[in-house]
Image (cartoon, rainbow, N blue to C red):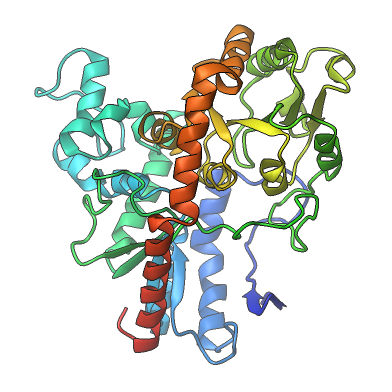
Amino acid sequence: MGSVDVVGGVALASIPSGIPDDDEEPPGFASIAHAMEHHMPAHLEQMLARGEAPGARGAACLIVDVLASWAVPVASRCGVPVVGFWPAMLATFGVVAAIPELLSKGFISDCGSPISTEGLNKDEAKADLQIANNLRIVPEDLQLGTKELLPWLVGCAASQRSRFAFWLQILQRAKSLRCLLVNSFPGEAADVVSGQHGAPQDLRILQVGPLLTDGLLDDPHELPAENPSMWQADGSCMDWLDQQRAGSVIYVSFGSWVAPIGPVKISELAHGLEATGRPFLWVLKNDPSWRAGLPSGYMETVAGRGKVVSWAPQGGVLAHEAVGCYLTHCGWNSTLEAIQHGVRLLCYPVSGDQFINSAFIVKMWEIGIRLRSTGRGDVKDYIERILEGEDGRRLQEKMNELRERVAVGEARFVAKKNLKAFVDGIKRDDL
């Protein structure tokens, strides 16, 4: 059984993951899924049954990230009320919840692959768009094709099938949920999709996000006592940022769980960043699979103007006044952090829900620009657009408006109200 630590008044209890604990890259999807289904349930059940949950008085409620849906039947067996947690946009939950309708109307096969039907236009692009538009899964203006809309279409055919089976299992287990907490802000999609699409009719959905530390730290240089990442952040980049002009730095990071984008793209991106003539901070894992495309002698060539680190304290970086824009994969947590600190976004989604996030960033909220390729010319041109001229000013105005609404405006008020309603529900035992 794992240990229990108390941090900031919160008791943190751990259970064995069943995955070797070392400093190597994170395990793949298949390894994680197998461990969650076949190793973790028994340990959690033992903890709940023995009253070893934090507080030692038994669990009043179990909040389960729906991506770890294996915990739902465990809670049921232990007689503990369970509530779901969705860590991404409400809009992406709507896509997953629509799977039964996508199947029944013949838009996708039993394996999750998009298929043609008589009612669809033969033109592939238009047919793709009809899936989203006909079911009203996401706003029509986003113009998302099937490959960008469906988050399980990642990797080879076998990988896509296993990911689709994973989502089907989540939906099956989610049928028993009566409440779902969502790490998103009220009004994320204006008057479009409610997120109830395909979900159980009695499922209560509460948007309680963004779940970020309010204001972070007074000093961006001060790293949090507890490292929230699996990797050690390079604190020297904060001192480097101090030496740069306000709003001048290009911050580049593709997150912690994105696979390498390939040596050709890395090479082009490197040349593009160099060609801007601007200072940049690039998070690039110190691993051959990530750095293989770096031009020979690149570190020496850009020394003084460019800084490449294996990992950065992202919250502190985005809070720093020197950062002018963020070239991102559009992971949801990264998106929320950028909004929190008012940093314009240059979007290069890679997989999963990142395409939906990017579409909202660019077309719904207008706080970023989509980078369609990592070609050196495109990288240079788009960075100029986002940092200079009318485009840059317009993006910053929109970002400031969204930041205000999410951080202190109506959306924040509703999120806090929803969270209070959830806590009150636990106290009344009527979740």
